Length: 143
Image (tube, rainbow, N blue to C red; front, side, top):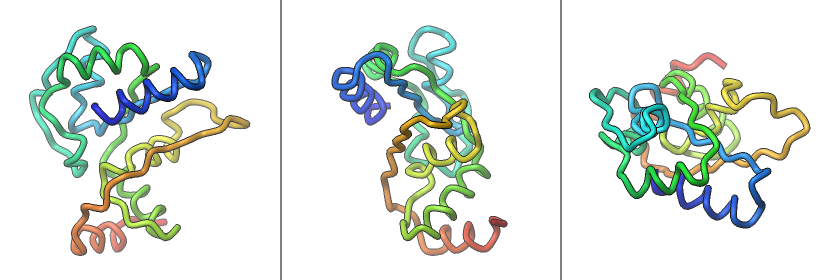
C-alpha cells in the first residue's frame, strides 16, 4: 500500500485530479480493496496468493488514509492473470516477481476499463523470483 499511496500522491499532485490512479491487488490478499469497500483500514482474514509482496494481512491506517485521498479505485487480479503477465514481461526481456507484474496483469485482463486512446503507465517492480518459480510459470502458462 505504501508504494501505491506514494505514487498516487505524486501523480495526482503533478498531473491533477483528471489523471486516474488504479491500485491492483491479488484476489487472495486484498486488504486495501476491503478497506476501500468498508471505508476504513481493514484486515484480510486469509492470505493465499503468489504475490507475496502484495500480501500484508492488513492495510495500515495511515497508508489507507493516504491511498483513499489519491487512489481512484482498487481492482483485483487472480494469480493466473499474474502468471500470464509474468510470462509476457519475461518474453519482453524483463524478469519480474509476481507482485511486480500485478499492474500489467490488470491491464492485460481488462480490469482497468476502456483504455483505448489513453496513456497508460504501469509500475513494474521487483525481481525477487526464484529460478524454479519463474521456470514453473514459463512452462505452465499457455501464451
